[in-house]
Length: 215
Image 1 (cartoon, rainbow, N blue to C red):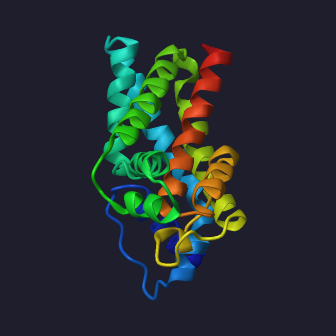
Image 2 (cartoon, helix red, strand yellow):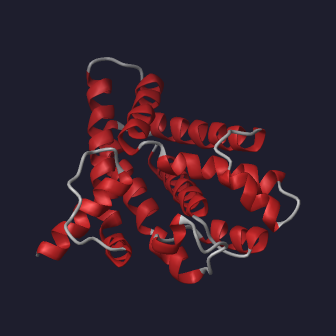
């Protein structure tokens, strides 16, 4: 039980901005093991922001504005960790001429044109999808999107080699099939940014699909 609680604290500390005590004796393998709780933490994030969205709607905030504020709240809760990865991947894959250049661009914290466009497309897609969902499906849909988006992460870590040996992805997990194939073709493997970008692709796709079916 203590090991599960340690893993939960590690997963919460990594995926959110919530202050968590660092488990005693935590090692890199502890972080890898904590990936099993990524879907649970993702579900918690989805539930929290879903209830926030319903609260905004209940007090008369228009659906589109409520969706925008909800997405902003989610970014604050998570520190926009995965959004940053998506932007870096878009800049690197779009602007680099070879693998070395792509990896170098992805290390650069500055936001480029491709990264900005990727964030706009992702945000606009999630905004429209969330605004289209009926009240009765908002919380469930956000739980599904956040849980499945983060639950897909360990798969890429298993399926792809590491594009570089000193990055976060050496101890983290994996993502959507399209992103996995793209990363393999572009840089020959995975990085932490690829994992973050994959989570965003999965999260956005799930919300859009649910809105198309339920909206």
